Image (cartoon, rainbow over all chains, first blue to last red; front, side):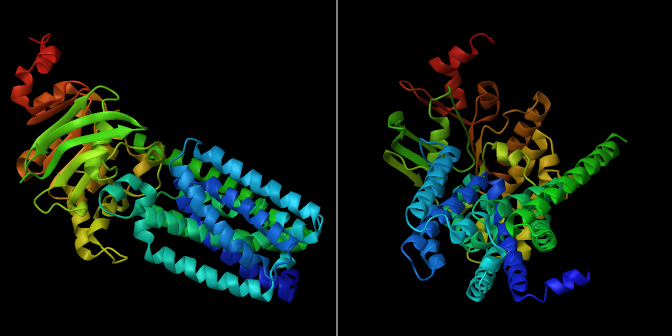
Length: 280
Length: 234
């Protein structure tokens, strides 16, 4: 306990806890829709595009790589959404093509210019000291935007997630809400990438949603449960990372895996009890 | 004026024409079944009527001030929906979205309408249950309740009995008939099931590349097509 308190005396850890929790929270909210719409791999694709953009930014020495990467990832998000909707190449393969291509470009550019230095390494695997004062401000602003938009559009997001065709047919402009989800996802991923690493950030989108769906049966409870799981896991992951001296991104993912296993067990037990109640 | 009319409408799907120069109209209180073989363009036409797909040629008109947000739609279920974690109430309430306009949240009226429609379809006992735990027939009822939330005038149903057992299928047809007869809701249904279509519908649209039939059910039974399908039964 003392050690945990001591941990919070380091300002970079405090920054990581704040940033990590906020990013996890945003990713989890968006993740519920993305997972249910079978778009979860878009997060993965975008993070790789983000890596490519950051590598190029580092190569040409842009003052703030993040501001360079955000617009590129946003454009990629719209593009990915479009091709998943209507294309001869099916959504999953299209995402795989774009994500690996972006990753390859990033690595090529990086090795040809600056080399695979610590910067590039931290973009790939994440780093706890990567969060600067400025990044935290961006994190806070971003998460306020995501949370407010999510609450305002909650009912529309539900309708579009559950049944896009029905929403469109009955006069809701589903395309706009899809774009809002894609835009917010792109922003969350780019900002979170530095800490989590581009190879692991998509886990923040997928794990909390899948975990809460093991147990929760209503959309609202899935959303709330995902948000809580995300924040708890990211703080726990940071503590693990501090204690065991492991990379923060990987630690958070491992905690998420543990929670998923626990929830799966709880879910199957409660299903069985439910089934017995029915039989009786 | 007709509620929905098609005037010389053509649709193409991936550059091949599936429907050519189709004309028909649906009036208030009608019960139209759209039948035809696989690939005859039933689903494409449905998308056109819903305004999800623009016709390649011709015009689809909506009369009597029928707006996009006054159409109730019962789509075919997608695999993603079958295990969707949402309560029945949440799903039904989402049918009221089109009456919210720019307001971000549902009003008391919306919530009451959702509850009324849940009651109307006899699924009150399920309202707190999760959609993914329901049987196929119960899920269809939930989606029908949602469609009723969206419109009091017209329902478009896309193969509503697919995958249901015979008893539940019959219940579903009765329910739709009741909505049509008692509440004067106009029904447009895409169906594979010619027997039941003829039994319940007032009008039949039989799509066929060269020889499309549109008319009342009685006329359909007298037509060459109707006779072809029902010759054995007599």
